Amino acid sequence: MGLRNLVVLLVLAAISLLCNAQEYNGPPPEKADVVYLLHAENLVETEQLEARMEDRKKRTAYVVEGASSPARTPMAEPIFIILSEEIQPESLQLYSMDVKKGNREIEMPKNPGKRGPRPRYLTYKRVEDEVYWIEANEWLENGQYCLTPRGANTVFCFEVY
Image 1 (cartoon, one colour):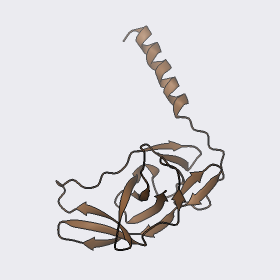
Image 2: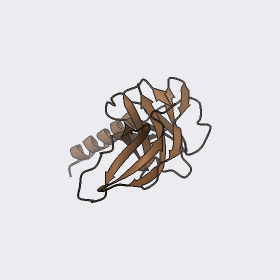
Image 3: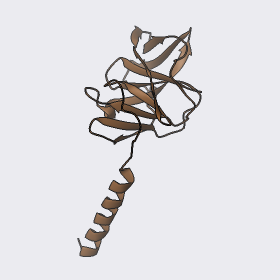
Image 4: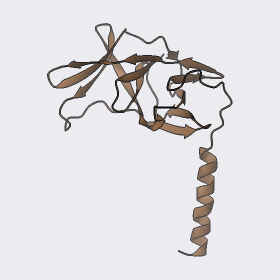
């Protein structure tokens, strides 16, 4: 590799680091391992629940009670803040939820070869020692959503309105 290519790579790496640096001057999260919606200078706690599993013919449903979450945001690309102690921020996945019979649910196929709901795109950035900025990286339509750590039944629910 020539000197010119090495210099170009170093400059690009420096620019990438500067672009990924994120300032967060808002209030610290009150609770560890709870996801908060960021609204200007305020943190709004998401609704933390345990989804119950329901075995269905070809699918497993993860169901939480209630047709809508009390945690609401008007932002189509919401920003979340989490103080991470046990939950790894990169393990969080964002799913839309269907409202059926007064409950919110996600159905996953039992057969691993079958296509299920896809998690929405997220970006993750560390802003302080254990504080992370998580951002929906695609437009969310109005509806019910949850963030859930991969492999867990804990859900952090919210509504986009």
